[in-house]
Length: 66
Image (cartoon, rainbow, N blue to C red; front, top):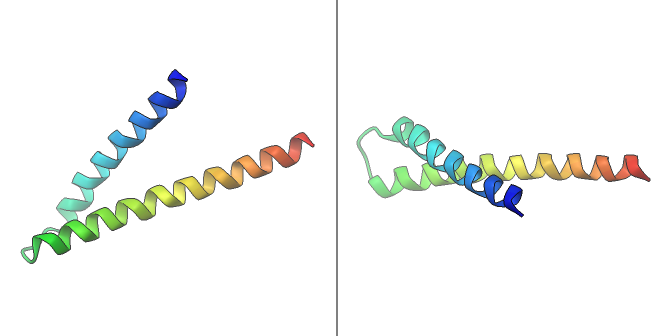
């Protein structure tokens, strides 16, 4: 159980780090809410693509066991 908790907190830390990285990229003087939406949207897309790639890995792993 502690492994999953550590993975959860690691992904939270990575999300916060990505928020600051992409937030600084999108800041250019404009609507602050628009910049926040772009930043959070970019982070969600990256994290979802990570989940999708892990699902493909798990599917291949299960296929190899059978």
